[in-house]
Length: 475
Ligand SMILES: Cc1cc2nc3c(=O)[nH]c(=O)nc-3n(C[C@H](O)[C@H](O)[C@H](O)COP(=O)(O)OP(=O)(O)OC[C@H]3O[C@@H](n4cnc5c(N)ncnc54)[C@H](O)[C@@H]3O)c2cc1C
Image (tube, rainbow, N blue to C red; front, top):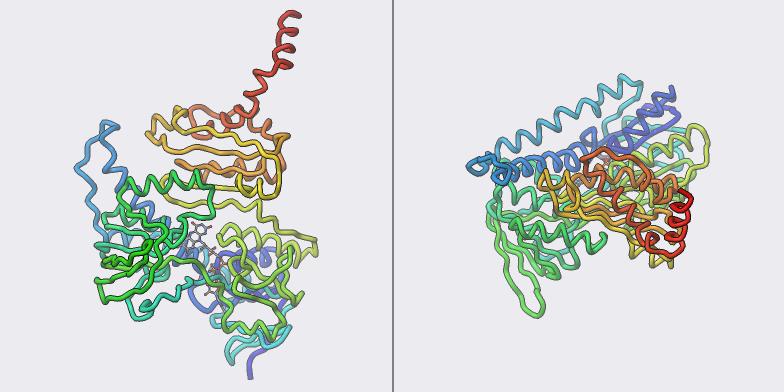
């Protein structure tokens, strides 16, 4: 007989979203059961953000050494010991892991259960034969997994995904990456900087979701660093064995074979719904994820879905944002509404590409009359000092100056986007950014200078000139 646990909140999945809900609910003294079938910390800690950003950091160091001469600093090239890079990546994971551990959550008062959760009916979740959990509210935070395309030969050919690529202890000689989205390109650049040859194959447009003029700057930079980028090529079949793989692609009318030592598949994500028993719980889902309303509730009103499982923006900060909304709704019965326009996104290439709100194209599709202002990094003194002059900011406003979206491509773009996220969430006018005092010399001045250009045309307006003339006459 399974043990029956009654609790207030039952969370399925101990990744970014699930851990945030569990920690917050426990902090309010609410009984919580948290079920995890794999590693605590989920994708972000173990196979996503943390290892990828650690690998990128290693690549950045190697690049900095190789590029130090213009600063008057000599170094005889970067000597990369890939085994040590592996140890660095896993050391970072191990250092952060205690924050997400069973022990920590147990200490917070959360009952952590190891095992696979499955709905038995609309109000009960089972974990194997051992437990049945009845809760006032359930939160599904089961995340996503790599979506593998149906390319003939892929199943039989050794290939890497984000679940295995960080276990490499030796540098690949030639990494072939299928998929030029953020994950594929971040890893492509990192491996290139660490000394691998890298070819990226993309059937459509690389970074297709991003503002094209900003994405082009990232792609140019990757190409300059030696990443071979092949857009518009379709992978037809894959073959090979250990350390010798071949991808046959269609490029225009012709077929072409691309040889490599390793294959990385980064062609998108598939929501983890298999085996969850969603039908038994009356929860609707499709290929994009679990269907939720604006308040993140599924068709079964006892059950919320958050993070990657909810099928929207698939980021750790989106999962955390969802968790905050669910806490307000489930514990305080407040009305909540997800606003996707407030979720920023960053591609951690170098230069970084960060965006929040509407792109110019999205705003125009919504038939908004827009104004666009830009400012280049090369006009920024700090960027010159750091020799980080590639990139620009692009801000989209409505006709009255309300900020609708911002894209930054350049150094520290992921840090700089937060000002614009705040601006959009507070419905600020660009006047507010033009008027703030920004420390000199910082990259943040790029944003202020872009905002000031919004007003530049009015300096040539006859009305403004007349007002200035009158004021001067008045002394
Ligand atoms: C290579 C890579 C790099 C990334 N980089 C970034 C980045 O820089 N910034 C960023 O914001 N995002 C990044 N992401 C995305 C980020 O990792 C995810 O958006 C985030 O982890 C989603 O959190 P989650 O809670 O929805 O799911 P997860 O963190 O994946 O957690 C889901 C958990 O649920 C468990 N689970 C699943 N089914 C069951 C079940 N039936 N029973 C019990 N447990 C179950 C899983 O084992 C897992 O631990 C990256 C992703 C990848 C792959």
